[in-house]
Image 1 (tube, rainbow, N blue to C red):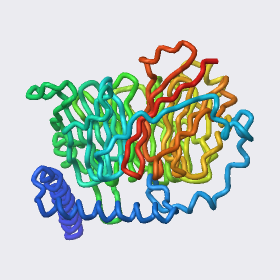
Image 2: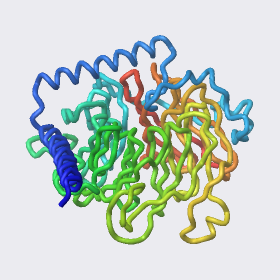
Image 3: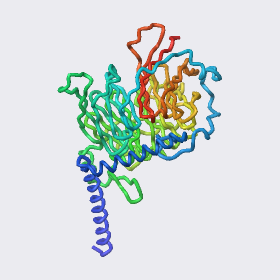
Image 4: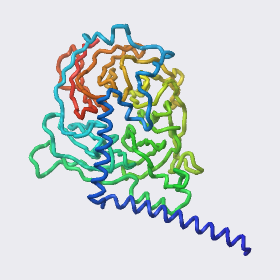
Length: 473
């Protein structure tokens, strides 16, 4: 064996040793999460406090930026509107100033969070809220003003997103992790609205980390001199969504990746690398499995899953069969996208961004007729009325509810998918609306009206509960 070959072999061994040492160090850091010292917790809390004070200061100045984007963006008031996209507002000049077609009441203001609620989600009996100071709270929908003691302090940063599946609560965090909580009734308490949380897992799981750490093909480059296994998010996990059957959990991150997890055993099945050119802020999944992602790069991308078995990395050299591939890129927004929402059958997609407009996208007619079509979509038009960034969206029946940096919530009603009317503007928050969720009010017995309950979280740290009544057509 020549001297050159020996040197080459020594170099390969050294590189492999360095990779394993770096990976093991990463694994040790993850496993030490459970043993975080009191000093570290105090430092983290101080950092979060500093961030929250900065947000509040900017809010007092009246020039708060869009906090759901990874990068600073210019004030929305100085950005042009989407003049090239036709308006869907019915009788636009007065529809957004005439709210007589709907009535609403704020039935409760939920206080308890010391920092703004960044995520809201509903289960059968409870409202869950996650805040920017790592706190998760549960609220009984039957006794809203009763604050429960079910508070979970989790992770090193803000709670970015919450979803519920069966008896499990999934939470996404700014510390790059996803946590899974088992929800059970507190047997030591006689109130049926008291719950217990038990942490089942932190994703990626220890099993995933150990199984991927030794093989070099499982390592991906995340920075110039930094590598990590593909199961790890390496920046804030910004949004979560479940597949229609609840078997899969989709997570998107500011690290520009999409990851797919199996909810049965929390295994990471796939990672779509470099899915966007900038931070990903939103994800939505249709009933037929199409995945929509919205990013600060101003684009919405549509993904579809190839049939087959396997797991692996998309965007890297891999023989994985179980990949999501890109089928369409939707480009009309002029600024970063903050929110996505689908209607019930997945034929309509709503997107909200910093350009003050909500865009409506519809499936192409030929794609509707073709079973298993690629999911190509075209822009139909825009809903206009908000004065600043659209930060959150939710769809209930034929209604679209939008929350904005302008401190208002608007309720839009669709007429045949081509015309919309702003039927209500909910005012009362003292800060930008950061999170929304809503449900049909099944307890409303007036046959002449449709009723829904809207929950809103704001940078003023309050959660408000609204009842909206709209006459039936």
